[in-house]
Amino acid sequence: MLSLATGFGLGRFPFSGTLASVAACFPAAILVYAGAPGRIPLAILAAAASVACLALGKKAEAAFGGKDPSEVVVDEFAGMWLAFAIAPPGENLARLALALVLFRILDGAKPFGIKALQRFPGGVGILVDDLVAGALAGGAVALAGVLPLVAGQPLQ
Image 1 (cartoon, rainbow, N blue to C red):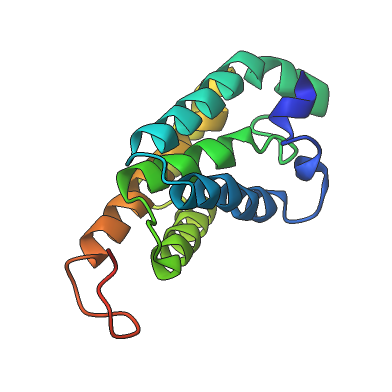
Image 2 (image 1 turned 60 degrees about the vertical axis):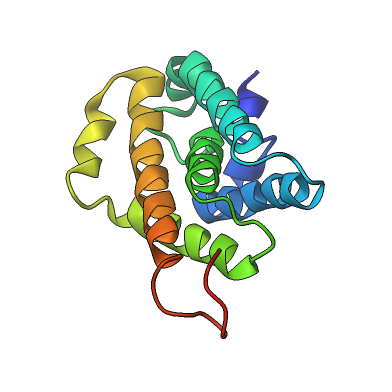
């Protein structure tokens, strides 16, 4: 089951968090282009990844050693999919790219006290900082939709 926590091995590569975040874009894009209705499928993906992280977190920390081991990337999937559920990319790749970049910045820098959230034990400590980063990234992308134009078109 730890293979799920590592994103089926993605967590074992360098830059595992970024790699997993990019990989999370593909199922989201597939859902959008398949005509999946709105935010619900993306929220379901985020919830499923969150449940997996919570269920496997303590075991993963024991197996890989330490708090929030870099091999565990299911939390990145949860955070990215939450960002997309808040601000679905639709057919606008600029929105998808903006959510990805903002999520990686927020997840890496952990501003606004996000870093303190990792103190929680097990899967909660692994997951919650990524969910907050995803929520902030999604909120920022949603706000960007009402701000100036990107490539001549609003971020819708």
